[in-house]
Length: 284
Image 1 (cartoon, rainbow, N blue to C red):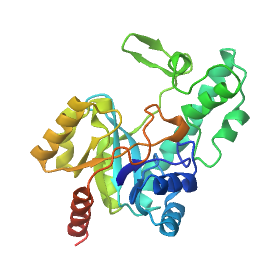
Image 2 (image 1 turned 30 degrees about the horizontal axis):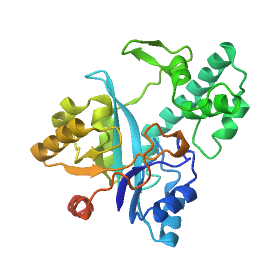
Image 3 (image 1 turned 60 degrees about the horizontal axis):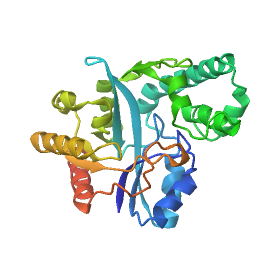
């Protein structure tokens, strides 16, 4: 099995790098792309553990970007990138720092709303991560008895971005994400292959042609948030623009809102062959 989208606790998974790769091995996954949000910090350790356990680790990243032309979020996977590459660090480190600042502000808003949690509680749950995510805040609220799940009504009351009949969350603080064109560019600069992650989640389908022109080479077809309609649309665009059709579980452990396990959205060996052939051509 091949899973080309997976996280660890270096970003927003509840499981450590070691635990994630052990689960992958147990599930029969032979190739696993570790794609933490906006960081490559966990990749050297992941590749070392992968060698020991017999799981080929594909060094990756998922960059939290924004399509400013269409006013919507977009996530770009970078596969086969060089860990620690300065171009990626230069683009993503300010975002990581801003996310931490925003997290402090959100925790303050949650406390001001009457919930008894502390920044220290949340930081402890985020140990090992590059920063605090909303999932860590929800975990602290769960531990203190305010909810029985990470994603539920309380999550929306606190962090909803508004729209779709929902009020803006009382602890919502916006984050300024990087431009999607810059995300694609730095992945290429770091020797990697840019792939559009879960286009159905943010309805990025209309932008695919434009992003192919600036370097996009793949589109995630198989994803826990894609139903038959989204899969079909992604496949259609892949054929139209000669994109590699990828897939992955987007595994987040206890912090998942889909229940998907590692390997549950496996792609076939032909996908890996296409990616590696493309990589060889790009690297001459």
